[in-house]
Length: 629
Image (tube, rainbow, N blue to C red; front, top):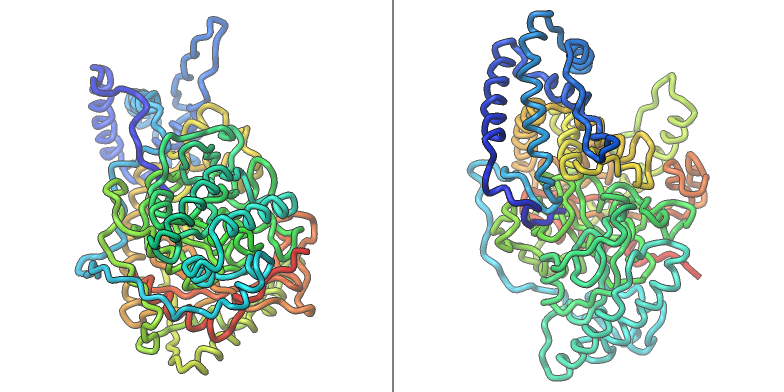
Protein backbone atom coordinates (compact mmCIF):
# COMPACT_ATOMS: atom_id res chain seq x y z
CA UNK A 1 0.00 0.00 0.00
CA UNK A 2 1.92 2.95 -1.16
CA UNK A 3 1.32 6.17 -3.01
CA UNK A 4 4.05 8.33 -4.45
CA UNK A 5 4.08 12.05 -4.87
CA UNK A 6 5.82 15.28 -4.03
CA UNK A 7 6.71 16.91 -0.74
CA UNK A 8 4.10 19.48 0.19
CA UNK A 9 6.61 22.28 0.71
CA UNK A 10 9.52 23.97 -0.98
CA UNK A 11 12.70 22.85 0.70
CA UNK A 12 15.07 23.68 -2.12
CA UNK A 13 17.00 26.11 0.07
CA UNK A 14 18.02 24.73 3.47
CA UNK A 15 18.49 27.33 6.16
CA UNK A 16 21.81 27.76 7.99
CA UNK A 17 20.11 26.56 11.15
CA UNK A 18 19.00 23.33 9.44
CA UNK A 19 22.56 22.59 8.36
CA UNK A 20 23.77 23.40 11.87
CA UNK A 21 21.16 21.07 13.39
CA UNK A 22 22.35 18.25 11.10
CA UNK A 23 25.96 18.79 12.17
CA UNK A 24 24.92 19.00 15.83
CA UNK A 25 23.03 15.75 15.49
CA UNK A 26 26.13 14.01 14.16
CA UNK A 27 28.13 15.36 17.10
CA UNK A 28 25.42 14.21 19.48
CA UNK A 29 25.43 10.71 18.07
CA UNK A 30 29.17 10.69 18.59
CA UNK A 31 28.61 11.65 22.23
CA UNK A 32 26.06 8.86 22.64
CA UNK A 33 28.45 6.37 21.09
CA UNK A 34 31.26 7.47 23.40
CA UNK A 35 28.94 6.96 26.36
CA UNK A 36 27.98 3.48 25.19
CA UNK A 37 24.45 4.60 24.23
CA UNK A 38 24.70 3.96 20.50
CA UNK A 39 22.30 0.99 20.60
CA UNK A 40 19.69 2.29 22.98
CA UNK A 41 16.31 3.84 22.35
CA UNK A 42 16.88 6.63 24.88
CA UNK A 43 17.10 9.56 22.42
CA UNK A 44 13.83 8.53 20.77
CA UNK A 45 12.16 7.95 24.12
CA UNK A 46 13.26 11.32 25.44
CA UNK A 47 12.16 13.09 22.31
CA UNK A 48 8.79 11.37 22.50
CA UNK A 49 8.35 12.43 26.12
CA UNK A 50 8.88 16.07 25.29
CA UNK A 51 6.88 16.11 22.06
CA UNK A 52 3.51 17.30 23.22
CA UNK A 53 1.48 18.98 20.46
CA UNK A 54 2.41 22.65 20.38
CA UNK A 55 -0.23 24.57 22.31
CA UNK A 56 -1.48 27.92 21.11
CA UNK A 57 -0.95 30.94 23.32
CA UNK A 58 -3.26 33.93 23.64
CA UNK A 59 -1.56 35.57 20.67
CA UNK A 60 -2.20 32.49 18.50
CA UNK A 61 1.49 31.59 18.31
CA UNK A 62 2.84 28.16 19.18
CA UNK A 63 4.33 27.98 22.66
CA UNK A 64 7.89 26.78 23.14
CA UNK A 65 8.51 23.11 23.92
CA UNK A 66 9.52 22.29 27.49
CA UNK A 67 13.20 22.42 28.31
CA UNK A 68 14.85 19.00 28.54
CA UNK A 69 15.98 18.31 32.09
CA UNK A 70 18.02 15.60 33.84
CA UNK A 71 14.77 14.38 35.41
CA UNK A 72 13.30 13.80 31.94
CA UNK A 73 16.40 11.84 30.97
CA UNK A 74 15.97 9.72 34.10
CA UNK A 75 12.38 8.86 33.15
CA UNK A 76 13.35 8.15 29.55
CA UNK A 77 16.23 5.95 30.67
CA UNK A 78 13.81 3.74 32.62
CA UNK A 79 11.78 3.15 29.43
CA UNK A 80 14.96 2.59 27.44
CA UNK A 81 16.25 0.07 29.97
CA UNK A 82 19.59 1.79 30.62
CA UNK A 83 21.25 3.60 33.52
CA UNK A 84 23.13 6.92 33.36
CA UNK A 85 25.38 8.81 35.70
CA UNK A 86 24.75 12.45 36.63
CA UNK A 87 27.78 13.46 34.58
CA UNK A 88 26.51 11.59 31.52
CA UNK A 89 23.09 13.23 31.77
CA UNK A 90 24.62 16.70 32.00
CA UNK A 91 26.81 15.99 29.01
CA UNK A 92 23.78 14.89 26.96
CA UNK A 93 21.50 17.90 27.54
CA UNK A 94 22.79 20.17 24.79
CA UNK A 95 22.97 17.42 22.19
CA UNK A 96 19.47 16.14 22.98
CA UNK A 97 18.03 19.62 22.68
CA UNK A 98 19.65 20.16 19.29
CA UNK A 99 18.52 16.74 18.14
CA UNK A 100 14.94 17.60 19.05
CA UNK A 101 15.29 20.87 17.11
CA UNK A 102 16.37 18.88 14.06
CA UNK A 103 13.35 16.62 14.42
CA UNK A 104 11.07 19.64 14.61
CA UNK A 105 12.65 21.10 11.48
CA UNK A 106 11.92 17.91 9.53
CA UNK A 107 8.40 17.82 10.95
CA UNK A 108 7.76 21.36 9.71
CA UNK A 109 8.13 20.04 6.15
CA UNK A 110 4.74 18.32 6.58
CA UNK A 111 5.59 15.25 4.51
CA UNK A 112 2.55 13.82 2.74
CA UNK A 113 1.63 10.14 3.09
CA UNK A 114 2.55 9.77 -0.59
CA UNK A 115 6.25 10.51 0.05
CA UNK A 116 8.27 7.31 0.55
CA UNK A 117 11.54 7.09 2.49
CA UNK A 118 14.81 7.07 0.60
CA UNK A 119 15.50 3.43 1.38
CA UNK A 120 13.91 0.48 -0.45
CA UNK A 121 13.19 -2.92 1.09
CA UNK A 122 14.27 -5.83 -1.11
CA UNK A 123 13.26 -9.39 -0.11
CA UNK A 124 15.48 -10.95 -2.79
CA UNK A 125 18.70 -12.41 -1.42
CA UNK A 126 22.03 -12.46 -3.28
CA UNK A 127 22.24 -15.13 -5.97
CA UNK A 128 18.51 -15.43 -6.57
CA UNK A 129 17.56 -15.31 -10.26
CA UNK A 130 14.13 -13.96 -11.23
CA UNK A 131 12.12 -15.16 -14.20
CA UNK A 132 11.63 -11.99 -16.28
CA UNK A 133 10.18 -13.50 -19.47
CA UNK A 134 6.51 -12.60 -19.78
CA UNK A 135 4.35 -15.17 -21.50
CA UNK A 136 0.72 -14.99 -22.65
CA UNK A 137 -1.89 -15.90 -20.05
CA UNK A 138 -3.10 -19.47 -20.44
CA UNK A 139 -6.61 -19.74 -19.04
CA UNK A 140 -8.56 -22.88 -18.35
CA UNK A 141 -10.82 -24.21 -21.10
CA UNK A 142 -13.90 -22.12 -21.79
CA UNK A 143 -16.56 -23.12 -19.26
CA UNK A 144 -20.07 -24.16 -20.20
CA UNK A 145 -22.09 -21.05 -19.37
CA UNK A 146 -25.38 -22.09 -20.98
CA UNK A 147 -27.15 -22.44 -17.62
CA UNK A 148 -25.84 -19.08 -16.47
CA UNK A 149 -26.98 -17.49 -19.73
CA UNK A 150 -30.45 -18.96 -19.42
CA UNK A 151 -30.68 -17.88 -15.76
CA UNK A 152 -30.19 -14.26 -16.80
CA UNK A 153 -29.58 -11.60 -14.19
CA UNK A 154 -30.07 -13.55 -10.95
CA UNK A 155 -28.46 -14.63 -7.70
CA UNK A 156 -26.87 -17.52 -9.59
CA UNK A 157 -25.14 -15.09 -11.94
CA UNK A 158 -24.04 -12.87 -9.06
CA UNK A 159 -21.83 -15.65 -7.67
CA UNK A 160 -20.32 -16.69 -11.00
CA UNK A 161 -16.55 -16.66 -11.30
CA UNK A 162 -14.64 -14.10 -13.34
CA UNK A 163 -13.78 -16.89 -15.78
CA UNK A 164 -17.49 -17.62 -16.29
CA UNK A 165 -18.50 -13.97 -16.48
CA UNK A 166 -15.74 -13.35 -19.00
CA UNK A 167 -17.08 -16.07 -21.27
CA UNK A 168 -20.61 -14.63 -21.06
CA UNK A 169 -19.41 -11.13 -21.92
CA UNK A 170 -17.01 -12.25 -24.64
CA UNK A 171 -19.68 -14.31 -26.42
CA UNK A 172 -22.19 -11.46 -25.95
CA UNK A 173 -24.62 -13.61 -24.01
CA UNK A 174 -24.55 -10.86 -21.39
CA UNK A 175 -23.72 -7.18 -21.65
CA UNK A 176 -21.38 -5.37 -19.30
CA UNK A 177 -24.11 -2.79 -18.70
CA UNK A 178 -26.53 -5.48 -17.46
CA UNK A 179 -23.82 -7.01 -15.29
CA UNK A 180 -22.87 -3.62 -13.88
CA UNK A 181 -26.47 -2.71 -13.08
CA UNK A 182 -26.96 -6.08 -11.36
CA UNK A 183 -23.96 -5.64 -9.08
CA UNK A 184 -24.85 -2.01 -8.42
CA UNK A 185 -28.33 -3.05 -7.29
CA UNK A 186 -26.90 -5.75 -5.04
CA UNK A 187 -24.41 -3.31 -3.50
CA UNK A 188 -27.27 -0.97 -2.65
CA UNK A 189 -29.45 -3.81 -1.37
CA UNK A 190 -26.95 -5.47 0.97
CA UNK A 191 -24.84 -2.53 2.08
CA UNK A 192 -27.32 -1.51 4.82
CA UNK A 193 -26.78 -4.95 6.38
CA UNK A 194 -23.07 -5.56 5.68
CA UNK A 195 -21.67 -1.98 5.50
CA UNK A 196 -19.13 -2.69 2.76
CA UNK A 197 -19.49 0.42 0.57
CA UNK A 198 -17.97 3.84 1.14
CA UNK A 199 -18.63 5.33 -2.30
CA UNK A 200 -20.51 4.00 -5.31
CA UNK A 201 -18.87 4.99 -8.60
CA UNK A 202 -22.10 4.62 -10.52
CA UNK A 203 -21.64 7.32 -13.15
CA UNK A 204 -18.11 6.17 -13.97
CA UNK A 205 -19.17 2.52 -14.03
CA UNK A 206 -22.12 2.91 -16.39
CA UNK A 207 -20.03 5.01 -18.77
CA UNK A 208 -17.27 2.38 -18.74
CA UNK A 209 -19.71 -0.49 -19.22
CA UNK A 210 -21.37 1.21 -22.18
CA UNK A 211 -17.99 1.78 -23.83
CA UNK A 212 -17.02 -1.85 -23.15
CA UNK A 213 -20.13 -3.18 -24.86
CA UNK A 214 -19.50 -0.98 -27.88
CA UNK A 215 -15.90 -2.23 -28.13
CA UNK A 216 -16.90 -5.90 -27.91
CA UNK A 217 -19.67 -5.39 -30.47
CA UNK A 218 -17.01 -3.92 -32.77
CA UNK A 219 -14.81 -7.00 -32.28
CA UNK A 220 -12.27 -5.42 -29.94
CA UNK A 221 -11.91 -7.73 -26.92
CA UNK A 222 -9.22 -6.86 -24.38
CA UNK A 223 -9.19 -10.07 -22.35
CA UNK A 224 -10.86 -11.87 -19.45
CA UNK A 225 -11.45 -8.77 -17.31
CA UNK A 226 -13.10 -6.83 -20.14
CA UNK A 227 -16.50 -5.71 -18.86
CA UNK A 228 -16.20 -7.31 -15.39
CA UNK A 229 -17.38 -5.08 -12.50
CA UNK A 230 -14.98 -4.79 -9.57
CA UNK A 231 -14.54 -3.00 -6.25
CA UNK A 232 -11.51 -1.12 -4.90
CA UNK A 233 -10.39 -0.97 -1.30
CA UNK A 234 -10.77 2.70 -0.44
CA UNK A 235 -7.06 3.40 -0.17
CA UNK A 236 -6.66 3.39 -3.96
CA UNK A 237 -6.89 6.87 -5.45
CA UNK A 238 -9.60 7.31 -8.09
CA UNK A 239 -9.82 10.69 -9.78
CA UNK A 240 -13.16 12.40 -9.26
CA UNK A 241 -14.06 10.35 -6.19
CA UNK A 242 -13.11 10.59 -2.55
CA UNK A 243 -10.47 8.30 -1.10
CA UNK A 244 -11.18 8.17 2.62
CA UNK A 245 -8.73 5.53 3.90
CA UNK A 246 -11.72 4.44 6.03
CA UNK A 247 -10.80 7.05 8.62
CA UNK A 248 -12.68 9.85 10.32
CA UNK A 249 -11.04 13.14 9.46
CA UNK A 250 -10.40 11.97 5.88
CA UNK A 251 -14.03 11.54 4.77
CA UNK A 252 -13.83 14.09 1.95
CA UNK A 253 -10.21 13.54 0.86
CA UNK A 254 -9.68 13.44 -2.91
CA UNK A 255 -6.71 13.00 -5.25
CA UNK A 256 -6.52 14.24 -8.84
CA UNK A 257 -5.05 11.00 -10.21
CA UNK A 258 -5.76 7.28 -10.43
CA UNK A 259 -3.66 4.68 -8.66
CA UNK A 260 -1.55 2.51 -10.97
CA UNK A 261 -3.69 -0.54 -10.19
CA UNK A 262 -6.82 1.41 -11.14
CA UNK A 263 -5.19 2.54 -14.39
CA UNK A 264 -4.21 -1.02 -15.25
CA UNK A 265 -7.65 -2.43 -14.56
CA UNK A 266 -9.18 0.37 -16.65
CA UNK A 267 -6.80 -0.64 -19.46
CA UNK A 268 -7.94 -4.27 -19.08
CA UNK A 269 -11.54 -3.12 -19.53
CA UNK A 270 -12.68 -3.87 -15.96
CA UNK A 271 -15.51 -1.69 -14.64
CA UNK A 272 -15.09 -0.04 -11.23
CA UNK A 273 -18.44 -0.04 -9.44
CA UNK A 274 -17.53 0.91 -5.86
CA UNK A 275 -14.88 2.02 -3.43
CA UNK A 276 -15.16 -0.50 -0.65
CA UNK A 277 -14.67 -0.19 3.08
CA UNK A 278 -11.47 -0.70 5.00
CA UNK A 279 -10.70 -0.50 8.67
CA UNK A 280 -9.52 3.00 9.58
CA UNK A 281 -6.02 3.52 8.14
CA UNK A 282 -5.85 -0.19 7.27
CA UNK A 283 -6.64 -1.70 10.66
CA UNK A 284 -9.46 -4.15 11.28
CA UNK A 285 -13.02 -3.81 9.96
CA UNK A 286 -14.16 -0.71 11.87
CA UNK A 287 -14.32 2.38 9.65
CA UNK A 288 -15.74 5.85 10.19
CA UNK A 289 -19.28 4.83 9.19
CA UNK A 290 -19.76 1.40 10.76
CA UNK A 291 -18.23 -2.03 11.15
CA UNK A 292 -18.17 -4.13 7.97
CA UNK A 293 -19.89 -7.48 8.50
CA UNK A 294 -19.42 -11.05 7.34
CA UNK A 295 -22.13 -12.30 4.97
CA UNK A 296 -22.09 -15.63 6.83
CA UNK A 297 -22.99 -14.06 10.18
CA UNK A 298 -23.90 -10.39 10.17
CA UNK A 299 -23.24 -10.16 13.91
CA UNK A 300 -19.56 -10.81 13.18
CA UNK A 301 -17.13 -8.35 11.65
CA UNK A 302 -15.67 -9.28 8.26
CA UNK A 303 -12.16 -8.84 9.68
CA UNK A 304 -9.76 -6.56 7.87
CA UNK A 305 -8.39 -4.39 6.85
CA UNK A 306 -9.62 -5.37 3.37
CA UNK A 307 -13.01 -5.62 5.01
CA UNK A 308 -15.33 -4.45 2.25
CA UNK A 309 -13.39 -6.20 -0.50
CA UNK A 310 -13.82 -9.64 1.08
CA UNK A 311 -17.39 -9.05 2.25
CA UNK A 312 -18.60 -7.74 -1.13
CA UNK A 313 -17.01 -10.63 -3.07
CA UNK A 314 -18.47 -13.14 -0.60
CA UNK A 315 -21.94 -11.59 -0.91
CA UNK A 316 -21.88 -11.70 -4.71
CA UNK A 317 -21.87 -7.91 -5.03
CA UNK A 318 -18.81 -7.49 -7.28
CA UNK A 319 -17.07 -9.74 -9.78
CA UNK A 320 -13.78 -9.32 -7.90
CA UNK A 321 -12.08 -6.84 -5.61
CA UNK A 322 -8.66 -5.45 -4.80
CA UNK A 323 -7.31 -5.64 -1.27
CA UNK A 324 -4.01 -4.95 0.43
CA UNK A 325 -2.02 -6.75 3.09
CA UNK A 326 0.65 -5.61 5.49
CA UNK A 327 0.11 -8.17 8.25
CA UNK A 328 -2.97 -10.27 7.45
CA UNK A 329 -5.27 -7.80 5.69
CA UNK A 330 -6.00 -10.10 2.75
CA UNK A 331 -5.59 -13.39 4.58
CA UNK A 332 -7.82 -12.65 7.55
CA UNK A 333 -10.93 -11.23 5.79
CA UNK A 334 -10.64 -13.88 3.06
CA UNK A 335 -10.79 -16.49 5.81
CA UNK A 336 -13.65 -14.85 7.69
CA UNK A 337 -15.73 -14.28 4.53
CA UNK A 338 -14.97 -17.60 2.81
CA UNK A 339 -13.35 -16.20 -0.34
CA UNK A 340 -10.04 -16.62 -2.15
CA UNK A 341 -7.19 -14.17 -1.72
CA UNK A 342 -3.79 -13.83 -3.37
CA UNK A 343 -1.21 -11.94 -1.33
CA UNK A 344 1.57 -11.41 -3.87
CA UNK A 345 5.28 -11.41 -3.27
CA UNK A 346 6.42 -8.05 -1.93
CA UNK A 347 7.46 -5.92 -4.90
CA UNK A 348 5.23 -7.60 -7.49
CA UNK A 349 2.41 -5.03 -7.71
CA UNK A 350 3.08 -1.25 -7.71
CA UNK A 351 1.53 0.69 -4.85
CA UNK A 352 1.60 4.04 -6.62
CA UNK A 353 -1.50 6.01 -5.68
CA UNK A 354 -2.31 3.85 -2.66
CA UNK A 355 -2.17 4.85 1.00
CA UNK A 356 1.10 3.91 2.65
CA UNK A 357 1.08 2.13 5.99
CA UNK A 358 4.43 0.30 5.97
CA UNK A 359 6.80 0.97 3.09
CA UNK A 360 8.64 -2.31 3.67
CA UNK A 361 5.59 -4.55 4.09
CA UNK A 362 2.57 -3.21 2.12
CA UNK A 363 1.32 -5.44 -0.73
CA UNK A 364 -1.65 -5.13 -3.13
CA UNK A 365 -3.52 -8.21 -4.33
CA UNK A 366 -6.84 -9.60 -5.58
CA UNK A 367 -9.71 -11.05 -3.57
CA UNK A 368 -11.98 -13.25 -5.69
CA UNK A 369 -14.25 -16.26 -5.71
CA UNK A 370 -11.65 -18.63 -7.18
CA UNK A 371 -7.90 -19.03 -7.52
CA UNK A 372 -7.98 -18.67 -11.29
CA UNK A 373 -9.91 -15.41 -10.89
CA UNK A 374 -7.10 -14.15 -8.66
CA UNK A 375 -4.53 -15.20 -11.26
CA UNK A 376 -6.36 -13.38 -14.05
CA UNK A 377 -6.54 -10.18 -12.00
CA UNK A 378 -2.92 -10.52 -10.92
CA UNK A 379 -1.90 -10.85 -14.56
CA UNK A 380 -3.37 -7.41 -15.22
CA UNK A 381 -1.95 -5.47 -12.27
CA UNK A 382 1.62 -6.68 -11.69
CA UNK A 383 4.95 -5.32 -12.93
CA UNK A 384 7.02 -2.11 -12.74
CA UNK A 385 5.36 1.24 -13.32
CA UNK A 386 8.49 3.37 -13.11
CA UNK A 387 7.39 4.97 -9.84
CA UNK A 388 7.25 2.36 -7.08
CA UNK A 389 10.94 1.55 -6.71
CA UNK A 390 10.29 -1.72 -4.86
CA UNK A 391 8.69 -3.42 -7.88
CA UNK A 392 10.86 -6.00 -9.63
CA UNK A 393 10.93 -6.88 -13.31
CA UNK A 394 9.65 -10.37 -12.55
CA UNK A 395 7.07 -12.35 -14.51
CA UNK A 396 3.74 -13.71 -13.33
CA UNK A 397 2.95 -16.30 -16.00
CA UNK A 398 -0.43 -17.87 -15.31
CA UNK A 399 -0.83 -21.29 -16.90
CA UNK A 400 -4.01 -23.13 -15.95
CA UNK A 401 -2.49 -26.31 -17.40
CA UNK A 402 0.74 -26.12 -15.40
CA UNK A 403 1.72 -29.57 -14.10
CA UNK A 404 1.44 -28.91 -10.38
CA UNK A 405 2.43 -32.51 -9.67
CA UNK A 406 6.02 -31.51 -10.40
CA UNK A 407 6.05 -29.24 -7.34
CA UNK A 408 7.75 -30.23 -4.09
CA UNK A 409 5.12 -29.69 -1.41
CA UNK A 410 5.72 -29.31 2.30
CA UNK A 411 3.39 -28.81 5.24
CA UNK A 412 4.01 -27.10 8.57
CA UNK A 413 3.74 -30.15 10.78
CA UNK A 414 3.44 -28.27 14.08
CA UNK A 415 0.40 -26.40 12.76
CA UNK A 416 -1.42 -29.68 12.15
CA UNK A 417 -0.59 -31.18 15.56
CA UNK A 418 -3.18 -30.96 18.37
CA UNK A 419 -2.82 -27.60 20.14
CA UNK A 420 -1.71 -27.62 23.77
CA UNK A 421 -3.63 -26.02 26.64
CA UNK A 422 -1.82 -24.67 29.68
CA UNK A 423 -2.92 -26.05 33.04
CA UNK A 424 -3.78 -22.59 34.37
CA UNK A 425 -5.69 -21.51 31.26
CA UNK A 426 -8.45 -18.93 31.67
CA UNK A 427 -12.04 -19.71 30.61
CA UNK A 428 -11.52 -17.55 27.50
CA UNK A 429 -8.36 -19.46 26.62
CA UNK A 430 -10.19 -22.75 27.10
CA UNK A 431 -12.92 -21.68 24.69
CA UNK A 432 -10.31 -20.58 22.17
CA UNK A 433 -8.52 -23.90 22.56
CA UNK A 434 -11.79 -25.75 21.99
CA UNK A 435 -12.27 -23.90 18.69
CA UNK A 436 -8.67 -24.65 17.63
CA UNK A 437 -9.15 -28.34 18.31
CA UNK A 438 -12.39 -28.33 16.34
CA UNK A 439 -10.92 -26.42 13.39
CA UNK A 440 -7.89 -28.70 13.21
CA UNK A 441 -10.04 -31.40 11.64
CA UNK A 442 -10.37 -29.27 8.51
CA UNK A 443 -6.63 -28.89 8.18
CA UNK A 444 -6.01 -32.59 8.70
CA UNK A 445 -8.69 -33.41 6.13
CA UNK A 446 -6.97 -31.06 3.67
CA UNK A 447 -3.73 -33.03 3.98
CA UNK A 448 -5.69 -36.19 3.28
CA UNK A 449 -7.23 -34.64 0.15
CA UNK A 450 -3.83 -33.53 -1.13
CA UNK A 451 -2.46 -37.05 -0.67
CA UNK A 452 -5.42 -38.47 -2.62
CA UNK A 453 -4.59 -35.97 -5.39
CA UNK A 454 -1.16 -37.57 -5.60
CA UNK A 455 0.76 -34.91 -3.69
CA UNK A 456 3.71 -36.22 -1.71
CA UNK A 457 3.88 -34.14 1.46
CA UNK A 458 7.11 -33.38 3.30
CA UNK A 459 7.04 -32.20 6.91
CA UNK A 460 8.77 -28.83 7.34
CA UNK A 461 9.07 -26.38 10.23
CA UNK A 462 9.24 -22.65 10.65
CA UNK A 463 12.74 -21.39 11.46
CA UNK A 464 13.31 -21.16 15.20
CA UNK A 465 14.90 -18.35 17.15
CA UNK A 466 14.20 -15.52 14.70
CA UNK A 467 11.59 -13.77 16.87
CA UNK A 468 9.23 -12.85 14.05
CA UNK A 469 6.68 -11.35 16.42
CA UNK A 470 9.32 -9.11 17.96
CA UNK A 471 10.02 -7.61 14.53
CA UNK A 472 6.50 -6.21 14.11
CA UNK A 473 7.37 -2.88 15.80
CA UNK A 474 8.99 -2.16 12.41
CA UNK A 475 5.50 -1.96 10.94
CA UNK A 476 4.21 0.23 13.76
CA UNK A 477 7.19 2.61 13.51
CA UNK A 478 6.69 3.03 9.77
CA UNK A 479 2.95 3.48 10.23
CA UNK A 480 3.53 6.11 12.91
CA UNK A 481 5.81 7.94 10.47
CA UNK A 482 3.26 7.64 7.66
CA UNK A 483 0.69 9.31 9.93
CA UNK A 484 3.01 11.48 11.98
CA UNK A 485 0.79 14.56 11.73
CA UNK A 486 -2.19 12.72 13.19
CA UNK A 487 -0.31 12.13 16.43
CA UNK A 488 1.50 15.45 16.69
CA UNK A 489 -1.61 17.50 15.92
CA UNK A 490 -3.92 15.52 18.19
CA UNK A 491 -6.20 14.73 15.23
CA UNK A 492 -5.84 11.04 16.08
CA UNK A 493 -8.71 11.58 18.51
CA UNK A 494 -11.03 11.76 15.46
CA UNK A 495 -10.46 8.09 14.60
CA UNK A 496 -13.34 5.80 15.54
CA UNK A 497 -11.21 3.20 17.33
CA UNK A 498 -9.63 4.49 20.53
CA UNK A 499 -8.79 1.30 22.43
CA UNK A 500 -5.32 0.13 23.38
CA UNK A 501 -4.98 -1.99 20.23
CA UNK A 502 -6.11 0.79 17.89
CA UNK A 503 -3.80 3.00 15.83
CA UNK A 504 -3.88 6.15 17.99
CA UNK A 505 -2.34 4.32 20.94
CA UNK A 506 -0.05 2.21 18.73
CA UNK A 507 1.27 5.30 16.96
CA UNK A 508 2.09 6.92 20.31
CA UNK A 509 3.92 3.81 21.51
CA UNK A 510 5.89 3.65 18.27
CA UNK A 511 7.37 7.08 18.93
CA UNK A 512 9.42 5.49 21.71
CA UNK A 513 11.05 3.04 19.28
CA UNK A 514 14.47 4.43 18.44
CA UNK A 515 16.08 4.68 15.02
CA UNK A 516 18.88 2.45 16.29
CA UNK A 517 16.46 -0.27 17.35
CA UNK A 518 14.61 0.05 14.03
CA UNK A 519 17.86 -0.60 12.17
CA UNK A 520 18.72 -3.49 14.50
CA UNK A 521 15.33 -5.04 13.83
CA UNK A 522 15.90 -4.70 10.08
CA UNK A 523 19.21 -6.53 10.53
CA UNK A 524 17.42 -9.30 12.44
CA UNK A 525 14.89 -9.33 9.59
CA UNK A 526 17.71 -10.13 7.17
CA UNK A 527 18.55 -13.22 9.22
CA UNK A 528 14.88 -14.22 9.10
CA UNK A 529 14.86 -13.80 5.31
CA UNK A 530 17.90 -16.05 4.99
CA UNK A 531 16.30 -18.66 7.26
CA UNK A 532 13.06 -18.68 5.24
CA UNK A 533 15.07 -19.00 2.02
CA UNK A 534 16.59 -22.20 3.40
CA UNK A 535 13.12 -23.62 4.04
CA UNK A 536 12.04 -22.88 0.47
CA UNK A 537 15.25 -24.39 -0.89
CA UNK A 538 13.78 -27.80 -0.04
CA UNK A 539 10.14 -27.27 -1.10
CA UNK A 540 8.28 -25.19 -3.68
CA UNK A 541 4.99 -24.81 -1.80
CA UNK A 542 4.06 -25.07 1.86
CA UNK A 543 0.54 -25.93 3.04
CA UNK A 544 -0.60 -24.50 6.38
CA UNK A 545 -3.62 -23.30 8.30
CA UNK A 546 -4.06 -19.58 7.62
CA UNK A 547 -3.01 -18.23 11.01
CA UNK A 548 -0.07 -18.96 13.24
CA UNK A 549 3.53 -17.83 13.14
CA UNK A 550 3.79 -18.17 9.37
CA UNK A 551 1.49 -15.18 8.82
CA UNK A 552 3.85 -12.77 10.59
CA UNK A 553 6.98 -14.41 9.22
CA UNK A 554 6.00 -14.43 5.55
CA UNK A 555 4.72 -10.87 5.64
CA UNK A 556 8.08 -9.77 7.00
CA UNK A 557 10.05 -11.78 4.45
CA UNK A 558 7.79 -10.90 1.51
CA UNK A 559 6.70 -14.40 0.49
CA UNK A 560 3.45 -14.94 -1.44
CA UNK A 561 0.34 -16.70 -0.16
CA UNK A 562 -2.88 -18.00 -1.66
CA UNK A 563 -5.76 -18.33 0.80
CA UNK A 564 -8.65 -20.63 -0.15
CA UNK A 565 -11.91 -21.65 1.56
CA UNK A 566 -11.54 -25.01 3.30
CA UNK A 567 -15.06 -25.90 4.38
CA UNK A 568 -17.78 -24.72 6.75
CA UNK A 569 -18.04 -25.28 10.48
CA UNK A 570 -20.91 -27.60 11.30
CA UNK A 571 -23.76 -27.29 13.77
CA UNK A 572 -21.55 -29.01 16.33
CA UNK A 573 -18.91 -26.26 16.19
CA UNK A 574 -18.08 -24.50 19.47
CA UNK A 575 -19.83 -21.20 19.90
CA UNK A 576 -17.77 -18.00 19.63
CA UNK A 577 -15.99 -16.80 22.75
CA UNK A 578 -18.42 -13.87 22.65
CA UNK A 579 -21.71 -13.52 20.79
CA UNK A 580 -21.87 -9.78 21.37
CA UNK A 581 -22.69 -7.93 18.16
CA UNK A 582 -19.43 -6.94 16.44
CA UNK A 583 -17.16 -8.03 19.30
CA UNK A 584 -13.57 -8.97 18.42
CA UNK A 585 -14.08 -12.32 20.16
CA UNK A 586 -17.20 -13.06 18.10
CA UNK A 587 -15.33 -15.37 15.73
CA UNK A 588 -16.23 -18.77 14.34
CA UNK A 589 -19.24 -20.76 15.41
CA UNK A 590 -21.67 -22.91 13.40
CA UNK A 591 -22.08 -22.05 9.75
CA UNK A 592 -18.90 -19.99 9.35
CA UNK A 593 -16.00 -20.71 6.96
CA UNK A 594 -12.44 -21.88 7.59
CA UNK A 595 -9.49 -21.55 5.20
CA UNK A 596 -6.23 -23.08 4.09
CA UNK A 597 -3.09 -21.24 2.94
CA UNK A 598 -0.53 -22.15 0.29
CA UNK A 599 2.84 -20.39 0.65
CA UNK A 600 5.61 -20.20 -1.93
CA UNK A 601 9.08 -18.95 -2.66
CA UNK A 602 9.58 -15.34 -3.73
CA UNK A 603 7.98 -14.51 -7.09
CA UNK A 604 6.68 -18.07 -7.49
CA UNK A 605 3.11 -16.82 -7.10
CA UNK A 606 1.81 -18.43 -10.30
CA UNK A 607 3.08 -21.90 -9.33
CA UNK A 608 1.60 -21.59 -5.85
CA UNK A 609 -1.71 -20.58 -7.41
CA UNK A 610 -1.61 -23.61 -9.71
CA UNK A 611 -1.51 -26.04 -6.78
CA UNK A 612 -4.10 -24.02 -4.84
CA UNK A 613 -6.42 -24.12 -7.85
CA UNK A 614 -6.01 -27.89 -8.17
CA UNK A 615 -6.96 -28.28 -4.50
CA UNK A 616 -9.89 -25.92 -4.96
CA UNK A 617 -11.16 -27.85 -7.96
CA UNK A 618 -10.89 -31.10 -5.96
CA UNK A 619 -12.90 -29.82 -3.00
CA UNK A 620 -15.41 -27.31 -4.37
CA UNK A 621 -15.52 -25.34 -1.11
CA UNK A 622 -15.35 -22.07 -3.07
CA UNK A 623 -18.71 -22.87 -4.67
CA UNK A 624 -20.57 -22.57 -1.35
CA UNK A 625 -22.07 -19.11 -0.90
CA UNK A 626 -23.88 -17.35 1.95
CA UNK A 627 -27.67 -17.22 1.91
CA UNK A 628 -28.50 -13.55 2.16
CA UNK A 629 -32.24 -13.64 1.57
